[in-house]
Image (cartoon, rainbow over all chains, first blue to last red; front, side, top):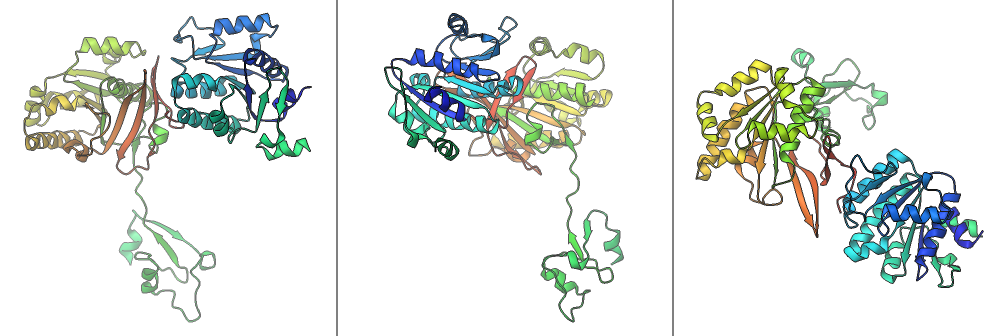
Length: 195
Length: 290
């Protein structure tokens, strides 16, 4: 098991900092999430539901245990919506997105949430809004005992501010190796496990 | 002393002296010393033998009318005060008419409280068609004798007011209505040019509404996004103000609700998100507005 896998397993809320290998990292994260038991809530602001399920299928990842919240397709929820997906008006509709996540937690009872990605929100919103949203979301995850994984593109301001809400920050190098700095771990319990 | 014993609108808690924190008999103290109790802030205590009675003024039970709107009742101690007048204000597109109609329909379908909708601007046909998309068959409710839709111009209502309510009162009595909607008070206020006349007219209307044994929602159309700092006569006269917002954030509109004022109610001070779904308005008092 790599350090990334171990960190994902040991920690409740993880920030995964990626570079050009973002897409590879996502697949790796999703595979690890699938490997751990339970249902996965995948919030996508990058790939539409149809493209994402196609990608997962090609990578040999079964989509049955996933429930998707799609904030990029700009579709409405109607009678033709897939059973395992709800649509949000736009990536920057944070209030709507937050409510969709709450409803998904209530109905689907996921054990893991993958949020792809906070970096996308930077296109639409100021950093302060994203930080406020992340704080609310991480609080919700902890209250509901749900593991959360936030892959992002390397951004100092985002990392500096969000790191106070997460249990660990995993920084990936371009060659795919995981660089985990134990001192970045915010969770005292995680630090205890490392000893 | 006997009058005090007969008084039924106060709760009294008999607390044996051993269990009464902070009040310990001192040596030689006279338990029947009324002045002692007054000093402690107890009003007019009743002394029964050697037991000190902790006298606590009680709050008469406030009768509440559940709105039936998901998320709202939990934010307002279970519902609106019975027979109160609530202003549901907001700008265009905020969802005021849907909110009001939902209050009426839920009253009929969930709490067996018939309702009357008085409209100054929209026609029966338009309203019935629009509300059908939420599954609210107003025609059917009308046929069942639980709902009445009254179309009036503001001038007609002014005339009716001079006769003590006239047709509106008759309709309320006929179906035993317990809920009433006035849509909208803004149209009514436009009848008069001066603030004084508007105030007089509004006072007269509210006095009439309060005589009718109905819990009333009065819809107010406003241009601005929130109650004004210079409170109007309406905002002073009503028992409650619920404000609906339709906030623009970049290229997205977000609906929200605020309980701005509610007499006799411990209500949430938070503005929270609202969504209009297939079966009506849903409020999320636990969620955050971004």
